[in-house]
Length: 235
View 1 (cartoon, rainbow, N blue to C red):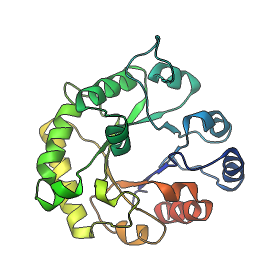
View 2: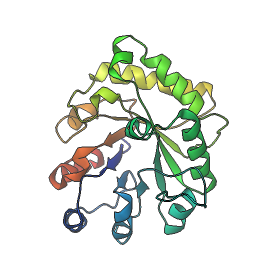
View 3: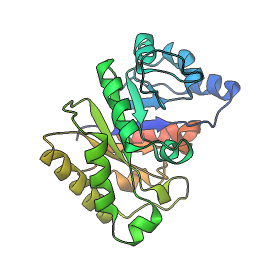
């Protein structure tokens, strides 16, 4: 079996002392593991790891955008991936699908691979609008994009950080829908699942045949959790 992708999104959980301990204890050599630390800590990670992602980028290459980081700047450092469209960015920073589309194009134009996050909220899920919402996000976010250098991360918003993980059958059904939509768009992209993934439930989630991997949130900042998850996806 081909190793599943493991995207470790550390968000904004760790301080410098935690980062130093993390780097000293977590050894990663497989290409299927992608580490996503807070942007200011990326230079520390670049000394040891080759598959790194920035957690967000701005849509422009250069300019008077205080506090922003561009895909051009990221690519020049040797970072390979950029997360775009995470639900927390859509929510807290009011990112629209149109802006996300621009960010994806900027990342691809600058040689980065993209991790595109899509997902439904609890109201949409309960109203049976999940597929409608995901279809809209896919078509708007990937409008006029033909690149295969994209990973789709399906994260039901109500699962992120809550411990509420969808059952395997439901996840498989939604992943199949996403892949069919991508096929209709002439795109053949890996699709990973995220939302409260940890070292315990990943052992069950890995049994889902059409899931290409996992995007992990808070557990990504816990060394013991990370080591266990790496072992599961690399065995």
